[in-house]
Length: 328
Image (cartoon, rainbow, N blue to C red; front, top):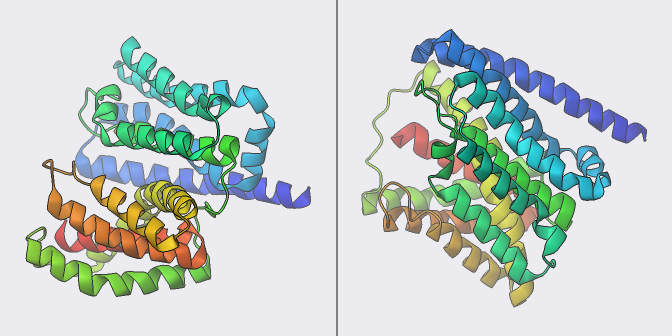
């Protein structure tokens, strides 16, 4: 009981710290991008609420509280998906009933999937296909409309969709072997860095050879370091966390188990990970898909070594940060 209370307190402290940092970052970003104060006050509360709910599944006692809701968890998750949209859209004057209906239907499907479907490989893969299809579509930019133009509000939808998928899998489906969490441990940092260093000599020359990226021309400075740090944290806690959870923590694990071969499971998950990058910029982007497939192998090796997505998250975030800072 004391441990649970301590962890719940840690969750509350984390939310407060992230909120404080987020408010400062948002005000700085708004000043740099010349975003009107009215837009900031309309968007920021919704973003802060979404961030708090996004962090929740990363704490085991919070997941236990969610599981204790039983059948009430489904309407709770649906409501949680709608609240940030309502807060932002009503304040901005961009509310649309069709957008609300889309979010309600999608969140209901995600939240109730494992209440209705058996926990078998076919339904698991179908659920992952649904999650990927929605995430890769242009749905959220159309649903989360911002008349002011900046900032783009589809991040609200992307974060919502990620946490719904995580909740469905960890709380309702009861998946294990993922080691879901936001903070890598020392061994995760070590493993993640190792496979990043092993990947660079292969990925960078291939990226240059295929013409996917030009040779880097950049003047390093203190600002570059801050941009790199901010990029890394964003990649670690959003992009890498989501993609590693679904592709390595779930897909690679399930394919390895169903085929009886960890190597085959890793290879299949990496190929599917590469295929998911075909729509990037111009479809079909074979160069990006090829690079993502090879990178996925290293992410998968990091995951397999620690049986933890936190290790592959580090590798993934480091690769993406290198790409964004040097070639972005």
